[in-house]
Image 1 (cartoon, rainbow, N blue to C red):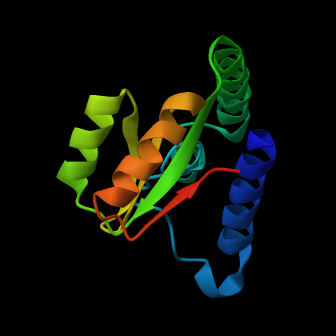
Image 2 (cartoon, one colour; image 1 turned 30 degrees about the horizontal axis):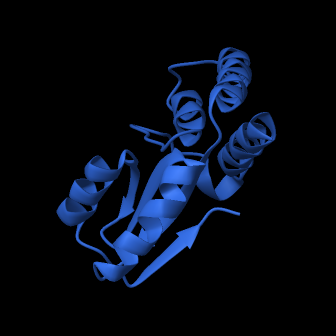
Length: 133
């Protein structure tokens, strides 16, 4: 799946670049979150498509291997103070992993710990906590 997402992202970039309306538009800088970092590196010319695809494949392999060591999961926390969330995560052995916006932070950790911390975060006042399915 990651290779498919990466390939689709780069294909969308190439379609954008090929469109006559955008012929004079080029990436000056690029950024991406998680898997998106690889398509960003291709967009700004830091890596070729082939180099990035090899890295995406290796990343996928290592992530899959990590899941064999310990079952993990994640949950999106909406409408909750960042510092309070980090404090709760640290006290319960999970991590605040992706700060997607001011209103959404993704937490990760072992499945058991995430399921234990969700009610704590809800009771502390989060608007919503959405566990991964």
